[in-house]
Structures are given as C-alpha cells and as structure tokens.
Image (cartoon, rainbow, N blue to C red; front, side):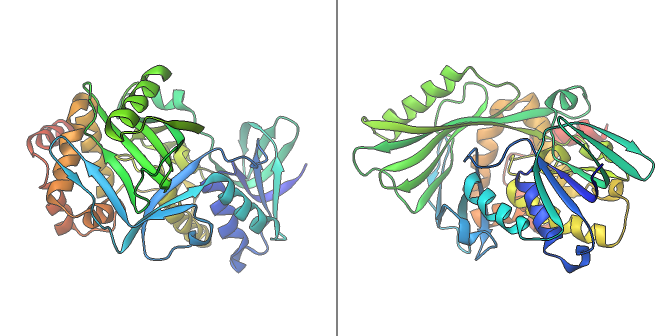
Amino acid sequence: MPTYDYIIIGAGASGLLLADALGNDRFFSDKSILVLDRDQKNKNDRTWCFWEAGKGQFDDILYRRWPKIHFAGEKLNIKPEIAPYSYKMLRGIDFYNHYLQKIRAYPNVDFLEESVQELAEKNDKVLVLGKNQTFEGRYIFDSRFEYQKLKSQSKYPILQQHFLGWFIQTDRPVFDVDTATFMDFSIPQKGNTRFMYVLPFSTTEALVEYTLFSENVLEKTEYEKAIEEYIAQDLGITEYTITDIEQGNIPMTCHDFAQENTNRILKIGIAGGWAKASTGYTFYSSTRRVTQLVNHLKLNKPLKDFQKKNRFWFYDLLLLDILFRSNHLGRDIFESLFRRRKPQLIFKFLDQDTALPEELYIMAAPKPWPFIKALWGRLF
C-alpha cells in the first residue's frame, strides 16, 4: 500500500496552493506528499476573482485586472478608483496549468487521478480509500464538501451565494474595460439580496452574471430572464452571442467546520470554512490560510487546533443572521457602506486587516437597528 506523510484530497485552489507551499519549502523536503483528484484538471471549469493591493503572487497568470469598480444601488451609482487595490480575475485552467507544472517538478510530490470514497483513521495513520486504490497517510487535508451535512445543523443560518453568468460577445463596443461592476443592486430585488456582476474583457466581451445571497436557489430560467433583461435594458445591448456559461453555488455560513477536524484530518477550502461567510469570496482567503497552515505544521501542533474563531467571524455571523431573517435588507446595507465609506476601507475590512477603530467606523455606516436586534438575539 502506498504510504505518504501528507495526502491532499482535491486539486482545487486550496489543495494545489498547499501542495506547492509544502513542495517549495525546504522544511518539508523529507516529507512525501500526494495530491488526489477525480479529474485531470485540464478544463477551464471555474474563475476566481479577488481584490489585492499592488503586485501579487498570481499576477503572471491573471486573465484580467481592473483599476475601478462600479457599485449601484437604489439611489447610488458610483465608479471609484480603488488604488492601491485592483480587482483581479484568474481562470481555473491557467491556475491548474501553472501549479500542476510546479508540483510535478518537486521530487517529493505526486499527483494522481483518483476519486476518494472514504477515510478511515486508525491510531497514527489514516487510510484513504479510493475508487481504484487505497493509500495510507500520516496527515490528510480534505477539500471534499458535503452540503447535506451542513444543512443538518440549525445553530447557524445558511445562505447561498448562487449565480449564473453568460460570457457574451457584442457586435459593437459597449464595455468600459477599466471598470468591473462589483455589485449592481439597481435591479428588482423581489424580496431578496440580488445584484448583477459584470467583468469586461474588452469593449465587446464580458461576463454578465446574476447573483443572489439568499436561502434558496432559483429555476435556471429565472436567472436567464434576469440576465436577458439586464443586457437589453441596463446595458442597451440588442445583438450579442453567448460564448460560454458559468454557474455556481457557494455556502455562506458561520458554521464551525473545525469540529470535523481531528489530529490527523483537516478540512480545507470551502469544506474547511475558508470561504468568507459574509461574501462567499474564498480564493484570496485560502492563500492566507495556506500560509498559516504551513506555519502550524512546522510547529508540530495537532491539526484540530488549527482554526480559531475571531471577531470577524462574529461580524459575519451578525450580517448572516440579518439576511437570513430579512433577506431584502441586503441592498440597503451594502448601499450604505459604499455611500458612506471608501471602497479601499471596505476591502481592507473584508480582508480582516482592519483595527478595531476602523471596524467600528465601518459598522456605523448602515442603519444600526437590524444589527442591534441580531446582536441581542445572539447574546440572549
């Protein structure tokens, strides 16, 4: 039976970033590392977007970046510069090609196509039972996510960031290539938190996406109708071709994913609660979590001690409590933030880089009563 020190299940963002961090660090040069995924990772199956100040580690493989964002609400329509930040987009295929090439060059890292069925922890080892082969590992990093297990708990509310997007090409120049539409809440809300998201790749090409933060997903035709109406009425486009389609669903919850961790098995990525609960953004937070995890491993601490809650977790919890009970308030909350605070400070807050005085200043922007009610509910 093949035996490894570390086995990483899933070659998504968190899995490949972790494999690269371990393979590239001399501290782990005597450790054997295996990455398992059910796919070869040779398709462009997703895109990741994030904001970042200055130059970053992914700049060489970015697909696009934007120096300005567009935010619109019921009474607000702004297109601010966001320097020193820029909004960045990374295609899945470019990420896979880059990081698979890197990890295959490490002598102590293997990548195999295998579907993992089950884990069995026994004393100082874990058996990883695949569809075709069984492996043995000392420590396992598991990115497999099960929505049903999340839904079985009732302590924390669960919303979904669900979306459908069309990559379109127009017959004439329409798009501002310097501006990414971050959130356009000017569309009908229908009792939910709904917005449009537009990423222009050229003056005639863009991703137009309909996104909701809500409890339940929609029928596919409802997403499609909303996109059609937005393209025609808001963007003024009459002739276009759909070149590709993107659809996804990201959990938004403060559920304690760490309770599934053991001394030898650690959940990572979305399965580990690495998605920002209040926004669904996962990619950039995963880069930070990987750095923290590598440092944790160097100290030889138990895996179950890795994740700790902080005050930002509680901020997210209050917002999710509000949106779960009163989903229609989302537009007002985000519009208040962008009307009264600079986007740079909002991004800094969402990155969890702010100090307490900055956080109090941010939280003073929306109407306080929904947050007071949510706080009262959690305390009592």
